[in-house]
Structure formats: structure tokens, C-alpha cells
Length: 256
Image (tube, rainbow, N blue to C red; front, side, top):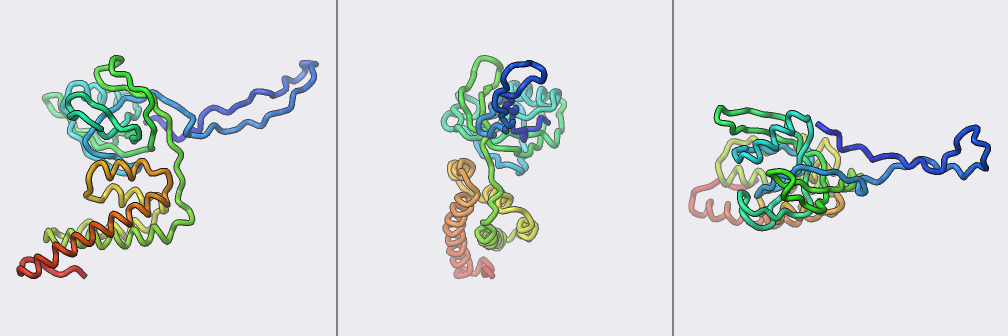
């Protein structure tokens, strides 16, 4: 897949050409162009959900235009953008949100009738500029990549978010009587950076798409973690209330 981690071309104007005989100009040290200034043209796949960087998402591809998009992505070994639909049905007129996530295909299962199942991994966030509705059967957008920070210095917030998320998962397991599988993910989560924790929590929360979109659009890891703690406080309170009702009626276990 195309590496979107490049920081763009270096600026080298002002360098002296050896032997030119002219008065030397001041030497300008090559500099990196900020990622937020580097643009690219990206095929777009509008959906009713949000993809976060580093997270996996399974997709069933059945519309002819998106079959073509996926075919080209596989053939050209490149990524495409996943954006949340702002208004209009996914299969109708799409108006995407401005911030989305580039996706690389990590799994592909073709079906005999042309449909396919794919698994994509989120790569990095982008801001959508202009959208071209006529160049291809699918939308194509001019995007700029958004800068990311690792959240260094926010380890305490990350631990608090991981604790709250563990309570959230345990509550869901208790309320639904499902096997205890997802709750074990929090131990592995703590080994990552605060940025990793923030995106894992964001991806694992069963909240409205617009709330997920706001988490994706949040500029810093610290802000994202603080927003997630507020959301988890709300969700855990609702789960505790549900468990209390289930216990009162004799239908459910207690939350440890």
C-alpha cells in the first residue's frame, strides 16, 4: 500500500551551485513540509460508520462502483479514504464529513458474483477539501493529511481511559451474558502509547456515529482521551443502571 507517512518534498531553494562564480546566496537548510500541508487525491468510500487509524474494519462490497474502487486499490497497491456520510443514504447522494481515514486492504475474499468481503486497516486521518463527483463512478477527493501526536505525557489519562473501558466491556459482558473475550483486550491496550489507547477506546465504544466522528476529528490525544472518559462515565452509568434492573428482576449478575 502507498506509504502516507512521508513528510513531503524538502525545500532546497537558495543552495549555492559550485563553480558558478556568482556571489553565494545564504544557504537554506532543507526542511520538512508539515504533513498537514501535503495533499493527495484519494478515492472515497462513504459509509455509515467511522474508521479510526490502526483499527480494523470488515466490509461487504457489492455496489459496482465500489467493486471497481476495491479492484483498483488491490491492483495498484494503494489506499482509499473512508468517510462518514453526513446526509443522504449510503447508496444514494452522499455528502461526506470533512475528516476521514485512509484505509489499506489487509484481507480480501472475492465471491463468484463479483461481490467481495474485505478487511481494511485505518492508516491516517485526512481533511477533505474539494470532492469530484464526475471523474470516476465513485467520489474522489483532494485531501490533506492531519498531523498526529503520540500523546506523550498523557499516560495517566490513558490508564484512566483503559480502566473505564475495561469496566465498560465487563458491564456489556455481564448484561448480555456473552463469553468474556473482549475484556482481555485492555491488558494489551495498556502496552501501547496514549494515542493507541485513545483510538482503541474510540473504536470499541458502541456510540452514535456522530459521536465517533467527533472523536476522529479531535485534534490531540489529550482531548480525545478526555472526551472518551466523559463518554465512558455516561455509558458505564447506563450499564450499571441496566444491571441493577436485571438483578432486581433476577435476570442478571452483578458488575464487579
